[in-house]
Length: 182
Image (spheres, rainbow, N blue to C red):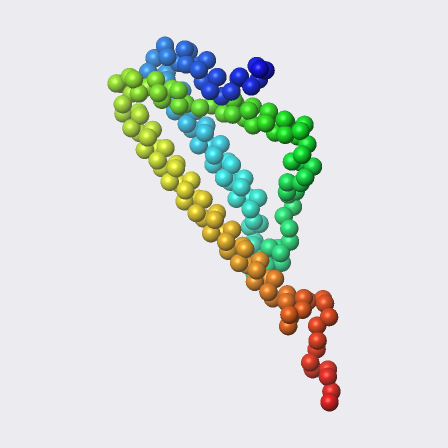
């Protein structure tokens, strides 16, 4: 079995266990706090990036432009057959995912060590509350994103229904009743 497969994030956590186990409680708390702040900052940047990619700032200013924009396809290319069938691409994606997971610092191991130390009880309570707040904020953001997506789909459907005239699409052969003479 290749060594790259064995070196998963869990493998690195187990390697770091020995190092962290003999650290003082204060150092572990500082390290855990730093990792938590970095993770929160990275999540906030990702959320900001997703919000920036999702819709332009002036989307609500002009409803007719918004409807036209919703009818257009996105600028990003979706998955194609070539992307899904190319083994080289799949390997690269897997490797990138593994590298991201290894580069992402995770403080779960540090928190497990701190649970065994009575002097870290207060920090662990605060950290637990912080994780709950972050989870609640993420859930609220997911709900908002889902409702925005639903409203976009509704706007797109309305734009498509406005383009339909008497059962025929705009630009097609529609019958004009005002020009018929008897």
